[in-house]
Image (cartoon, rainbow, N blue to C red; front, side, top):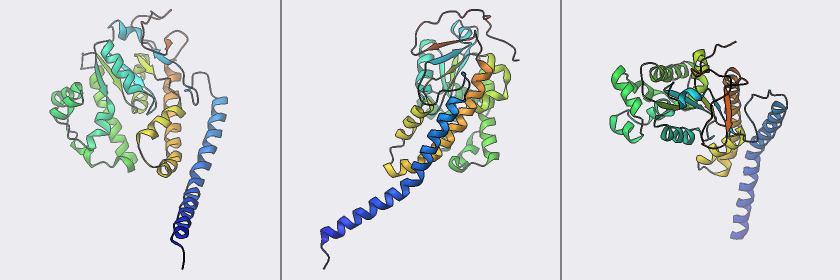
Length: 277
């Protein structure tokens, strides 16, 4: 008759074996992605987003927002980079409203955009937009965000873009706009490239680690998610790099690792506007 302890040990060994087998593919993909990132980093341009080491946040054309010549600014960065925290700090410091695009894009599928909910989320301008423009966001409750089609994605981005259009044109209140989908929205209107934009300096790897840590899932589940996250972050990196290369020039940006007094940039006009080459 088989001993109970032997049976338990055998089951544990089988579980470990299965775990390693399941880990094999994610680990291989992860290592391949790391090597790919190293090659990408070596061959990247100086204005491309950082991959491994975090850098200071980059403030582009920020002087007009600080001097109230422009009533809005954007905060761009990877998911998990800390852009929401920075956006809140900027909103508090410059007495502006913080606008989180994720509220309209992702949270609308789980919550009704009621006055009570938006007030609790401190998204007053989104509530104002819905009321003034008579916007109905109920259709977004039907979208499966984990398996969106290209058509659904286009609808979501267009919905967020209309909100950003309203914030930057019809709205006159100061606001700090953050959200990952600015990567897709900003390229639709080239004139935004001359507006105040803050790029979070948190590296791609650090941001991804923070994002995965939020899930609070098991080790095996996390390992299985790594290849998907690497793919997502690589796509996001291309979007961020495209915007950075359109925006940054030799005189319109400053690097900062913490909130502090900004000084007027050299050789830039106070309107912050410039034509793209």
